[in-house]
Image (cartoon, rainbow over all chains, first blue to last red; front, top):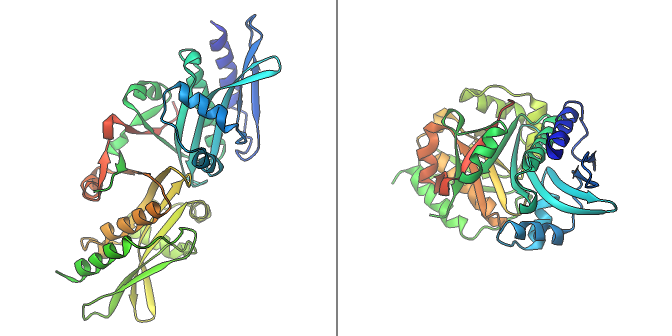
Length: 175
Length: 175
């Protein structure tokens, strides 16, 4: 079992007991057991460097969006999750996700991204599990998202179901 | 062209010029040209009688939800739309819809309901057009929803597309 796997198991164990409100700034860190001296941390602090976030989104080839609107979207998201690689005193943003919500029943997850250099290590799954854990801790029962075709299996592996009982995701386009 | 149709054309005409912020309480009324003396109005005021809303949801057979949570969901929705039948000094809640949003890019419409006695008259379409107009006025470009199988064609007729480019709506269920 490699570093990420062992780290990931720790995260799952933590998920069962953590009930910190989403509004609080929480950082969860798990020290790596490898010799590399790095660790991965998660945070729900929404005070992010927008340029660093833009750099992350650039790395996966997303179209750029006005930072003014990105700032507003982050302010008005119910939950903002960031994932960091920590090396000594330095940290680097390597993942991100956020969710809109009515704070009562429904949440919709948007903008899930993991830096290409950190993909294929189970970190996308860890990011999503942290996000789901936070939403569940807020008593949100209906967690939804819209998935591109190439990530359907990834989300299926996380417990997401496409079109349950024939319910379809729809997007409005001007006629 | 019947009453609802002629009323509806008026609503469409208004849609092009109205840019009232969502946060404001706005009521739009169009007098009926029929002899019945009734009119239909729309409002984005979120100060609703929750028992009246529950009665409306009961009428379409929805499972009851704790009013405390319904209140919280309404407070934290980006947009709340109600539709009323007005007869003289009395008004009756006959339709409802709400949307969550990040106030910048995305909105998701939930809880769309029209009282059974008022279905089949074009009022569901009018309710949705009012809702879309309000979201567009707030510069929301990505309007989404999750549609049950029996209302897919209704939403298609409104300009909604299911699974565009293979994007799938997904719901999380505990493994």
